Image (cartoon, rainbow, N blue to C red; front, top):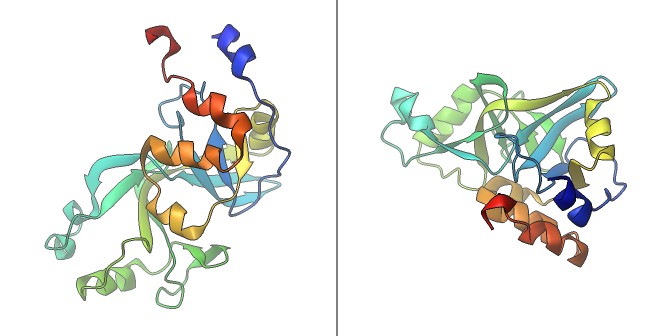
Amino acid sequence: MAAYNNLFKIKHNNLLPEKGSILISEPFLQDAYFQRSVVLLIEHNKNGSMGFVLNKKTNLVINDFFSDLENLSDIPIYLGGPVSSNRLFFIHTLHELIPDSMEISEGLYFDGDFDILKQYMIEGNSIKGKVKFFLGYSGWIKGQLGFEIKEDSWMVSHSGNASIMLADGESYWKDSLEVLGNQYKAWINFPKDPHLN
């Protein structure tokens, strides 16, 4: 693996992480949660960081957990990260409709009154591209994320709300790298398991 790391290693782009940034994992990261992942930072301060993996859809749907939602079209749940993996979180663009929401960035919000959101869905309103659900979150203690960025495990970038809400699968990881320029083509084309080539 060291040979591959040296061949494809690209230094981080010197963007500092902040609330609302996205983190794009390097292609060599083999962690089950973070391999080819893009993480939205919903909090970043001197005490640590919190975010959600945007592009890892589970086989679970919200409808199976709430009987009053079971007749709606399936609403997917994404794997937010390894911390509190039995807790449901959501991000959304419905700030005016969902009280107690916390702003992540302009037009993008975290959590809020879930009962009001449920009622919004029961009334037949589409949430596609407006709400995204996660089990668990990704967390870093004080100084940890900065160290991982310096070690080039993550590339810091920004993404529009529309793409964040619809992000899914490895294609979103590749698209997020393409935006950063041609120097990341080697990352995009690097095989998941180089030993199988």
